[in-house]
Length: 320
Length: 320
Image 1 (cartoon, rainbow over the protein chains, first blue to last red):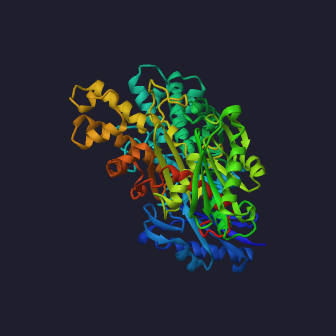
Image 2 (cartoon, helix red, strand yellow):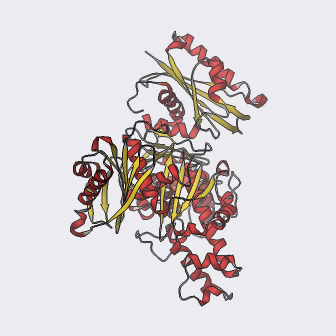
Image 3 (cartoon, one colour):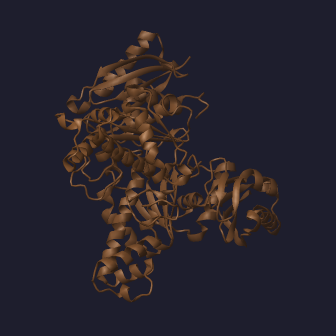
C-alpha cells in the first residue's frame, strides 16, 4: 500500500491530508501558518507535520509516493511560486525546498487550481475530464481542468477568471488595481455592491433597506420570500454570471462548470438563474455545458493537492 | 523514412500536404471541394488524392504514419465532426470514414484549432509550449495550444474566442445569431463597422469619407499617413483587441498570442497598438505575455493537421 499527502497552505492555517494511493482520506488536520520572518518557518513546519503523521500511522518514507502542495500565489508548471503576498514568500522553488526538508517528492500549484483538480476528481465535477471551477467568495477564484489536467498557465495565472475585464469604465478599482474585473460584479462583494446601487437608483420598497449592511445571503433570502427589489438584483446578478461564464466557456469549452465559494451556498436557485441566461451569451456548440455545485468545501484543496501528487508521482491511476 | 499527410478542408478547395516525419513539406497541392450531394464525395476525393501522391513519390502505405485532417466545424477529441455547414456534412466520424477509404490512421480536428497547432509548431508561436491564435479575418477564428496540445473542447468549441460576449446590448446580431460577440468588433468587418460609426458620430474631415466603402486596410493605410479620424478608429480598435485578448489570457495564460488573418497584414503597428493597452486589462501575472504575427498564412492548416497526425501516430517527437 502506498500513501501521499495533500496540503493546502492558507494565510491563517495549513490544511493537511494523508491519503492512500486509491484516494481514501486517512486523516486530516491543521497547523497554524507562521507568517513571521517572511514565512520562513512554513515549509519546515509542514515537513515536521509530515514526519509526525508518518510516525502516528507507522508508515515509512519509502511507502509515500509524494506530496502535493497548493499555495496562494502564481505557481508555474515546475512548482516555482512567484511571491505569495499572504505568506510573505518571495520566489520559492517548492519541490526543491520542501522536497529537501521532507525527504519526499513534491509537486506544487496555485491553491485555486488544485481546488479545481480536487472538485474534478472527487467533487462536483467527478466523472468529467474537463471542468471550470468558479469560486464565488469575497473575490472570484478559478481553476481549469482540461483532459484531466490542471491548466497552470505560462505565468502561473491559468484560471484567473476573476480578473477577466468585463466592464469598460467602472469608477471603482478592483483589489488587483485594474478596473472592471469580473470579481467586482460576480463575487459575494459584487452582488452586495449591485444591491447598494439598485437601492440608490430605485425607490422600490424592500426589506433590504432595513438592513444595516446587505450581504449576498440577505439578497438570496429576501429574493426567495418574494422581495421584488432583491429579485431584480438577483436577475441582474445571474445575467452577469451567465455572460461571464459564457466568456470562459468560449475559450476552453468544458464539459461542466462547477460553482464554489460562499455564494454557491445559495444552491439550486443560483444554478437555475445562471442557466436561464447562459445560452443567450455562449457559443451555440457549448449550449449543453453542465452546471453543478462544488461538493468538497474546504477540503477541495487537500484532495486536489493529493491528486496532483498522484498524477505526478503515482504510477497506477488510469486517468493519467 | 516515414511520411504523413496534413489536409485542410475548406468550402472551396481542399489543401493537401505530404510531409516527412521530421516535418519537411515535400509537396503541397489543392483539389476542389465537391459540396454536392451533402459533400459525400469529399472524403473519397481526398482518399484518391492521397493514393495519387503516394504513387507519384513511390511511397508505400506502410511508410505512412497517418493523416491529419482539419475541417470547418466542431470536432470532438475522437475526431467526430458535428455538422459542417459549408461542406454539407452531417455528423461524421472522420477517423473511421476516411480511415477506411484511405487505408491509413486518421486524426481530425477543427480547422482553426489545427491552424493554431501549426503556428505553434512551425509559425509565429514556434518554440512555445502554450499559445493563443486569434485569426482576425471576416470573423475571428481561434485556437488554443496548452502544453503543446490543441484544446478541442468538450463540444468541439475550444478556442471559439470570436464568440466571447463582449458587449451587452448591441442592436446588430452576429453571424452566430447572438449579440455582442468579439468578432463583431475585433474582425476586419468589425473595424469597418467601427469606422462607419465614427464617421457618422463626428464631423472630423477624413480621407476615409471619400471612399465608397472603408476596409480595414484603408483605415490602417490612412492612419499611417496621419489621418486623424483613422487614427482615432485605430486606437479604439486596439483598445478593444487588448481587452478581448486580456480576457482570453486571464483564462489560459499562454506564453504567446499569435495574430493571423487579413488584419494581421497591418503588421508591427497592430502589435504595438494592442500592447499599448494590454496591461491595462490583463491580470498582472500575464503582463509578460508575448505577441507575434502568424507566419504560415494559408499553410497553417496543412502544417497543423500533419502535426496532429504526428502527435497521434508518430513515435519519435520529443515534444509529445
